[in-house]
Length: 343
Image 1 (cartoon, rainbow, N blue to C red):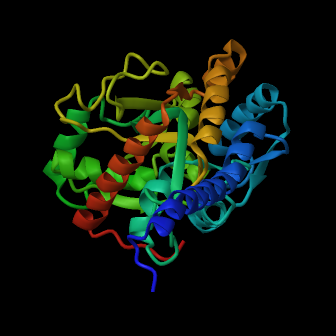
Image 2 (cartoon, rainbow, N blue to C red):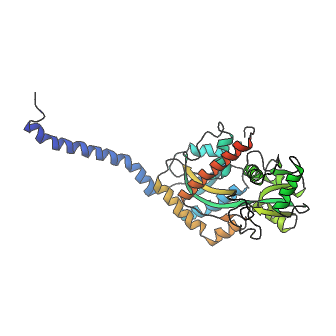
């Protein structure tokens, strides 16, 4: 038997060890090669942005404006693909299951990315934090506590006093539907103000806006995208904004934080996400291109015309926004006992 201490074996070991290490390094290089090639050659084919809603809404408009700019920056077609259904779950799930190669992206917003996983855990079978790679928030818009022009309420305090004076059922508020941001924002306001306005769900933004215009509800949370034209025409009135700072789309409207509601903030944001595992170099390529797109004066003017507020972020800031919104809405759903039918 040859001993491990034999000089022959000792002389052979360095050569064998070198061969083993060399082979291992070659193997690692082979594994790393596809990712490196992907990053260096990206993009070399069309990119798809999935919008989990029908054409024509704010999400669709945002995706098309951003996609047009991305196409020009990256030199590849950017195709907006509407995959509506189940409150945004169908399109979102499609992206979760897509290859993490940067060619399938999601136009995300708080509904499917911060609310539905808590409200419909079985239908929204994805983890909003773990299953996505955030790229950037593009734009956002606050809600405004909005009343009809004929309403007797000219301030938030007027509304609160009337609600408390009349008790539960004295006032109601409308939303775009059970479990939407305008619903949870309304419940968050009830909790913060100590009011008990009754929730009246509508089937979407247009019916809700018509409901407020027709005084079917006492108040509602509407975005400037939906209400600014009616405010300008004197048919609706803003009482307060839900943003942390006054919104440039209605700078004369005070925020709820200004009015004493500490840390109250509810915004609708729109941003791009990729499936988990998308290479960092690809994410960086997309982010750098988007940064240029969102700095383009023509793009900025187009977004301004929709009453959206530019709020371009880093991937890290976007990840933190998703985490904080998910936590806030999960707490509202639990405390308010919100239950809704499957989307």
